[in-house]
Structure formats: structure tokens, C-alpha cells
Image 1 (cartoon, helix red, strand yellow):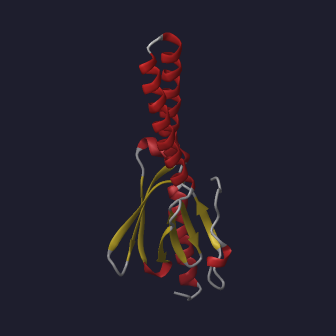
Image 2 (cartoon, rainbow, N blue to C red; image 1 turned 135 degrees about the vertical axis):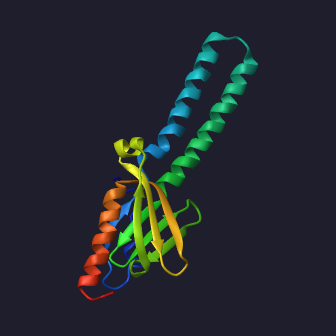
Image 3 (tube, rainbow, N blue to C red; image 1 turned 90 degrees about the horizontal axis):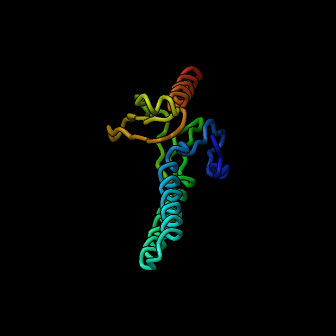
Length: 166
């Protein structure tokens, strides 16, 4: 997986280390990019085949709108992360304002993965974490290698139990 922003070392506790630092699957930006390319192609076609200035202006405004929406989607995509450390699961998101959600590993009850057949081909899916305390399920969508994430969370929890650090 690509690493655009990594979890800051200063945010780690004493002996804590990062095991996974993942960003959303690249599939999340395909639709906005394809839409932008399509609108640009239509704008070019309109500009080359018509003499109606109003159509060109409308298409130019539409291209600007789609560009801004695509840029917003990209910025959100690049500024979201799923981090697994030896102590907790962290979900960070936000461009200008960071929202961070943390689940200590000792509170995790169940980790499940849901994938459609298309998601299996693209190696993406949804990760559900059930944790004690709030009795709430937390869902993380569109992260790559969800089965690897599930396996690593379970491995770290089991390792902590074996070491008696639970």
C-alpha cells in the first residue's frame, strides 16, 4: 500500500510500535478521476464541434465544478489512515481538521471482514470491529487487504495474551 502520510512517532506510547499504516484503497478515487476525464473530453468535443459560446461556458463551469469535487475527494482519500500498533487500532481522517478514533486492543472482541466478489478481486472490503465498552461495531470501508488487517489484529491480540500483557 502507498504511504502518503505516516503515523507520527511522537504519538506512540513507550514501547508501542506501528504494525500497519494503511490508506484507503486506490479504487476510491477512480470514479472521480474518470468523471473528470469524461467531462473534460465532452468539453473539448463541445468546444471543437459547436459555435455556441453558451455551451462552451456551461461546460467550462461544469469542468471546474467536477475538478473541485475530484480534488476534495483526493484530499480526503490521501488524508485518511488505518493504523494498527502493538497497543491500539487508530483511524485518522480529515484534511484541515484531524478526527482520530482509537480502540485499545484489549477492548476488541471480534474482527470481521465483508467483501463482495468485486471487492475480493480488487483486494478491498469492509472491516468490522466489535469492541467492549460501548457495545458498538465500528466499520472501516475501502481499506486494502482487509483479510491481512484482520489477521494482523488477531495476531497482535494473541501475542499480547501469550505474553500475559492483557
